Length: 258
Ligand code: BEZ
Image (tube, rainbow, N blue to C red):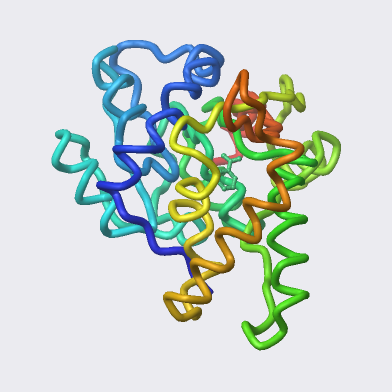
């Protein structure tokens, strides 16, 4: 069950993803003239922000539809899977917002990011962290468990803790400067059902139209008590994992050995 993206729907009802991504851009601290890889660039909104700061941005995304939308915004984007990055020591920074939790094959992802960076280059990202959207994932799991004829549900997401991801970064040679889990209740102005249509498309891809509607209403019913109020509308239980790490700069001894 792989996730298919609809860039038009995303632009209409998921703009909050890049709007709420500004803190990680601040953590990146982009400088004019820097070469930056936007890993999982989606429809290119944050890449555009980096371009406006005179950064030389390359965007990659595994969705052809998202890449086309990013290109239409003038982003130098290409279709490439995060676990098969084809870059060698050419970026000052690799940046990623709300994408790494889709890249469950994380060892090759981290190898590719490390390889793509110049010595001393930084890796700055935000992704779903441990406990992210737990209400929603629990509800999806239980709705599938109660409807066995729909097949087995496997989550496509990876929401690591700070200590787990720190260990992975260090295992791949990065020096971790900071990493933290942040609760970020996130308003879903278009409602939970539209959120599910955009982000849990993978779960319903094999269902009939009728089963899909039933899935949406059963999940909505299950999460309503926790995520909906008259006062605030729908607010999802997002948890961010935000970090800044770097590839060590070469020491003189390393240079002499080259
Ligand atoms: C997230 O940004 O945390 C996220 C968004 C959609 C699905 C799963 C996680």
